[in-house]
Length: 450
Ligand code: AMP
Image (cartoon, rainbow, N blue to C red; front, side):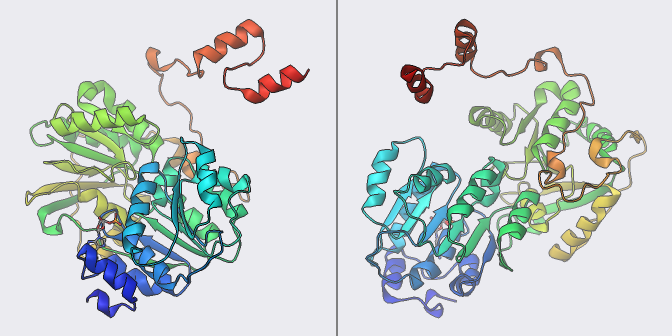
């Protein structure tokens, strides 16, 4: 298939030719008609698959020239880097089209951006926080938005942008096309889709990268969390075989729990990354793992996305991914560059249904290994494994991830300290007996008036 087979127009063909692109990538091929149809769309594709053009080609193809100033297309992305990158991509594609594109993000002067908005635009690319601030300031009119694209929605939700997204939905016109792209499917993403999308069409591309033949896949059936920990300890004690291991878990809390369990025995060999860790901490952990200083890396699906680490000996799925795409994505971290990789997956009884789905997706079975004799089977259950009393109609409880579990072990002394926020503010508060900060203009104004 070439781009000629898609129903594009001359300005787009010319732009693609300038870029030297002749064939659409699989996600571009699949998404074109679906996005062009105007229906809601959910695309599962990673960065690097050409997903930006997958939604921009049909959008630009159908966007009519307009002299009105309010944007008609809104693209939301999680980070400012991505704003810049997406704007650049759109500008390349729209080289021969008379279309006004603007990128806005937080951490920069909002007034400059307000002036830019006031000049008029067709496509706005934004991070959620800044978009909302501009939207409520009324400089930015969102009433003409016809298409909303949310890119990297998994990252966005993992970074805690859910409320910002909902606030934005509130100020957008109801009649609009929703287009969403995500690299991984998570419970959060799934929930957002069912809440806000109307019968979305799904387009998925097979995870590219490591061919399956390069990876030896095996699985264990394991009774519960603590038994999984025991099995993991046993495997990891073989340092020669398990010399560079990524352990995947579905969410942050589980990552921390597992780290706590492994810390004692594998203290300086083990690190953890998820979105509640600072950027510096994450970078340091990854660098240490890459260099071989740490043998074991615990990661959540979303955070492990960009990882391109050589010579990973094993990927261990501590839980069984609920979506086959995530499993493919996880195991693709091993067996790179023609080397044999090894992937293991642990499943409890309730997780076995996901194994069937993964096997169906890959069209192959994952061989079951016998549970090793020397490993202790625990009877202790974590909060999530105990019988649940289902609370119906409680909108504030969204997923198990939100359920606060009891502390199931004593925290070490250094971890007992509570983070109380900025010390400056606390000291000033003590001194003046009132909260007062340097930056609180409203507070200062109020007080002056009195
Ligand atoms: P993305 O997944 O959108 O981040 O795109 C990854 C890279 O692939 C970008 O640098 C695009 O310019 C490039 N790209 C997008 N579409 C094509 C295509 N059809 N052929 C070759 N490269 C492409």
